[in-house]
Length: 274
Image (cartoon, rainbow, N blue to C red; front, side, top):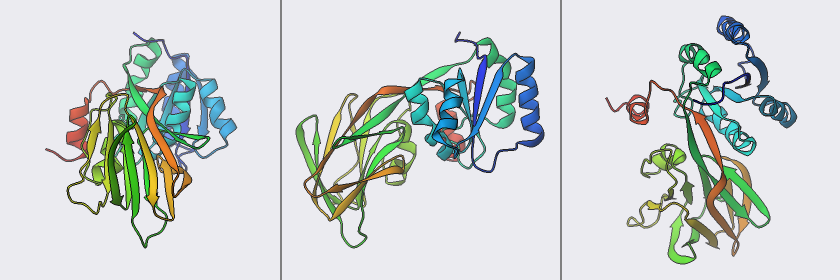
């Protein structure tokens, strides 16, 4: 058993400020269960979103995977569990349908829900630090040339990559950009890190799965500017000769999982594996 949810926050994708009859049903059921509700749009001010986390035992994200990613880092920093209700497209991270979530409210109020932890990545570029649930991506800012990146793993020389870029992925992010670039799928509760080149100049340079606790240092050897992005946001330009260090963050994200859908069932459903 987990702590009963007495205060529930909602973060909504833009355009979902009104959920009509279903939204009214949710609020009525929460009221009947004695759950206090706080709401904000994911695109509202940082102060509004911080209030939702500060005043909640659990935060529900209404949207797609992009909305979930926007909330994930803040949830990890505040150590507040997230539950995703899919109102977007694919929905790898948002495991619940609207009706499944409505039926699960009683379990949340009673503390009868399941939590699993996801690792985050910490990317340090100079004095700046970026957190990512999915991936840290190094991409060329010029479309006219490849970049040349020196990769060091755990202070040991690994390889030099000539490519359009490089993906450093967490297990959760293994089904995102990493998968599109030919990388492997990892179970999301693991702590491994995947290095995947983007359109490598060498056909023999393949994705590599690193052991838990690995540190990946990326140095720009060639290329005017390389952009470093965490979950597709917070771009930092990395100049030739400069380095970034990516490792597992000390922060963890707690996620409420759907008891009727394990990870392999999720893969079958979302990737149409039959």
